[in-house]
Image 1 (tube, rainbow, N blue to C red):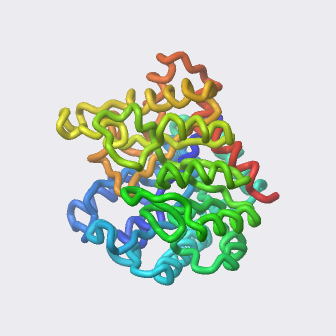
Image 2 (cartoon, helix red, strand yellow):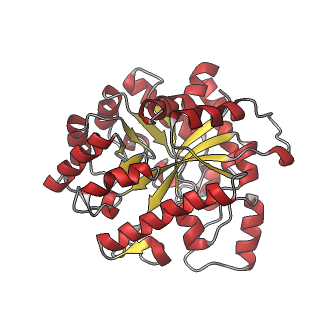
Length: 367
């Protein structure tokens, strides 16, 4: 397989909050936003339909994302901020409806993937994409929806409705909430969080551990019987100057692997070197550090089956915040030469690109 699967992109959030049109080239989007700045937008886009095709990024896990108003409200404007779970519920449903609307009204650009047959047919098209795709024959981007932070789930009886509407994965936390601790807000699973896990398992959702505080994540690994990923999270032990609860300890990485989970490595400078600005800025950060993250996870777990990509591009991450070799989503393959230097072969590269996350998706999607 020559294509990529990206396990985390905040597409609906960006479209609704910043009016970004991902049918455009990333360069057109940048030019428009420089000419006419958008309130709350602090970084240049990395995403565009031509660049998905040029980089052979066939499928993304597209999030439903909203931030609690207490956390950096300036960075999360408009409908992406909520004060109550009821408001979060409304935001998430609007974002999920947007994915359906995009797939219906711009089917040449977006394709919602809800079952195994749709997934296989979609990827079969991308398997034969030429290295230099014809703009007149660009393929649609496949989207599988995921909820980033479960605060929008106000009634557990609603979970089957979310599934029927196409949601396939849920992460309990972004920040801390009534279910568990999250980024910069530590805490284990609550009794409500345990009940949510049990109800999620009954429906069959993938559980996403990204953003969860470590004690909560370990308890999830022991309690949740379904499939588990960490859609966008690096190994904390490799990150110079790191001091937070957002990334994964080596012990947690090994535990995720025991559960046959997959981790999406993030090419974000602050997740590669927390002191990157002081150390020289963007020009001092190479995608070699991304390759080192992948290699570290493989060495820790003794396997190449537990790591892929979760870029989080445009989710607070712009051109200014990624390694200097990356200009857009089209450039993910620039990591490959470093991985080859570490001794990984083509079959293993394809597992990192797509195969590992594909294995999880195929095991969860209905026929």
